[in-house]
Image (cartoon, rainbow, N blue to C red; front, side, top):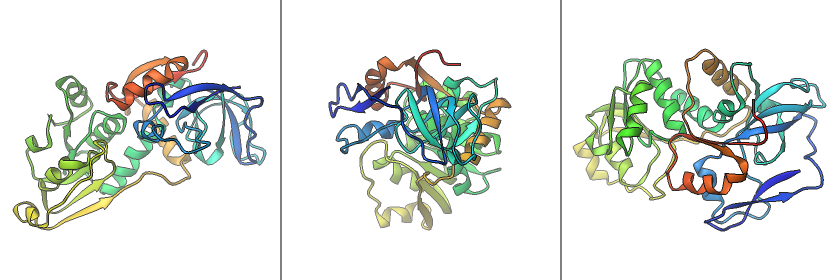
Length: 308
């Protein structure tokens, strides 16, 4: 069995190795023949100084070849999307049954692979933000995988979304997904906003915070700029004066219900993955570099063999 492991080399962050055997699933895990997987930008940071034994890969789609021994999941032969804790960049992956959803025929494995981490994050972020119908929402870092899903889901729920993205080309797609306004710098956003969903960090966070309504909420879910934010107490006196900053991290199994929700929305034409790059997994190292350097809009998907 082939799988990808970290090299620690920024120019070629992964390489292939051959294992003598497939993964051995725990009683509550399926063995999935991976047909497509999707890396996330945060994973590219982990590859810079990888921990010993790191087995990357959390977003997969493929075919169940061995059902869970405890009977908790679908049978062999079922097409699924999964969110394993590790090891997804391989020909076979063991996936807990609480972290899979069955795929209908109308969703391809390429589309499905783009769903798990970004889609689950978007769903859980909107729950953290509370009811958004009729509220003004500012979304930073909107042209990534999470941002596209958030824009579409929030707009469909009745929010007035202002999306922040670097280029006009990327902004055009966000408007198609429902953004009421697109700006290229947080400071251009016409506030105030009831909710800010912030993933950039650095100066963008403080600028976004200043655009909240009094008592508004900023949900901080990332730091894509890799620059820490500094908040000045006195600066807020010229803005909302009173605001809530909520730190957010998506993780926490089970994921089955959220994956099933994402699959249902996609199958119903209410959620559209933005896949900026699809390539054979032999090109994974190149794709990871482009993803890290923000040269890919939305999600990247790597295919193994013939994906369906």
